[in-house]
Length: 432
Ligand code: HEM
Image (cartoon, rainbow, N blue to C red):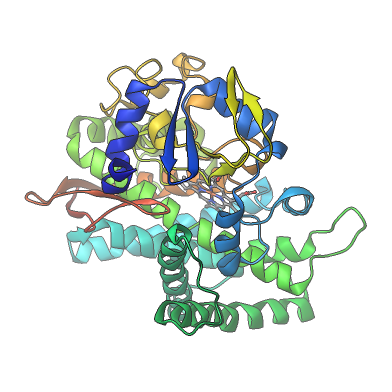
């Protein structure tokens, strides 16, 4: 455990190189089983997913911030909600969301023309936050920027709190007025003050705003009943929390890798120029830009924003593959480790988008590549995130090339997501 606590990512790289099937760690009386073999991953996340729910202490901490939404909920309730939300990212809605993505990236481009020295992490956090606010509850960046920013700050501060809370052996109840608890409750109140009035207004008027909230309010369960107001609030909060920083970090790491590999940047720009001939991209263009998708997949391999899935718990003594596993063990599936297996990714630290060339489909086992998880809890926003990231990259590299500022130390910091500890400074240069 000391090694794990000192530099968790370095520890993960060592474990996966030395133990290609699985490895057990001890944390006091607790056993952590890290699964590396794709067959074991499939067994736990997909085939026998109902036997291995998210670990109870993890869900309890998540639930304090995210209520009973998709991320912390479990069992039949989770399955019912997931079913109700299956049409959330329906193609007809994605068209409208993709226009927001393109439009908002244009606003950022204007800022790049004015000031070429950027902290790209900050840029991406703001851009994805405005996109999720607009597509989720129609908060326009020009009129509701302050509220969207306050909600994003509250969520980010809650995530830091959750991270600390999760590792405390003894959980301090929320009613104890510690500094952390007070800030946490205040953040929850901020979110309620911003989101509840919007939800209540929508429930009264039922106008279609072409956003995710409209789809949540239209959803019906198998008995034809809509979601109660509190549940709608929880789901909006979950989608906002899960759907903003993840995409921002993915884009930041992609800029980092492209900054280190100008030759790959060139290939990407050539594809963009050829496919679009100077006009803005549309959703339908993406299939003609396969290299951009390959770049993103390779970036998600090296820096999967969710570097470790929520721990799953073993509820009774059992076997997984050929291994006996004790009740109470926690199972760790880490995309960060899985994506570095020499057997599937030769020279694993090398950034090489060609690994994901369509002609090589099938060479990487499905459960050795998990940037969005797998099974019944696979990321519900995966397609949205991929489209968003591609549209943003395409537009920015259509107009600018980038260089990393020299003399900065880039250190990945692994909390719930991985981000560069001190941001990422780049210089952008117009291409024409
Ligand atoms: C590149 C960006 C993203 C990455 C890398 C990512 C990754 C993931 C992963 C790995 C999980 C599964 C966690 C587990 O099994 O423990 C997950 C779940 C989830 N994600 Fe994403 N995500 C991204 C973007 C989004 C977006 C844009 C949204 C919504 C707008 C979203 C909403 C969710 C939700 C609600 C869940 C919980 C699903 C459930 O348990 O049923 N994510 N995400």
